[in-house]
Amino acid sequence: MPGSSGQESNLWLAYAMLTVACWGLYGILLHTGQTTMGVNDPNARYKAFLWVGIAYFLAAVLAPALLLLLKGSDWSMSGKGITWSLVAGVAGAIGAFGVLLAFGANGKPAVVMSIIFAGAPVVNAVVSLALHPPAAGFSSIKPQFFLGILLAAVGGMLVMLYKPGPSPKKSTASIERPAETEQR
Image (spheres, one colour):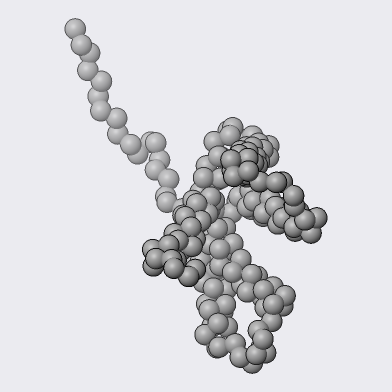
């Protein structure tokens, strides 16, 4: 932006890092919500997803509606913009549900989310290139770009193949209990 300070021009990076932190915690928080929804509840993932939807309603419906009201918006919106925004929301919701289904199929948060966060940039890059090819042609793309895609895919695969195993469970029989003393 012309006339902007260096601090303002990097505001996008702060917002991106906020998203990294939130999405980095998303899988762990969602898994905790699902597993603490009810012991052996076969519907725990659906209950957790219900509350994710309620959170989306609060954060993604009420908050922007309030901001639009406060900023005096005229509420006019293009049909195409509404359609693409709804498609994006459905894709995000299906993705969130996929995370829960992966957890329900015994996927561990560290592995599931690593695969998702390694794979999503690859999908983004490929689709973005297909929709918006470079003006100078595909031959103008630097090899480092393709190396980055390859490294992201290999990173996701390595996390899946070499994930740490579960910690050994301690036997309750081997745990000695201190002798009880009577108080008189």
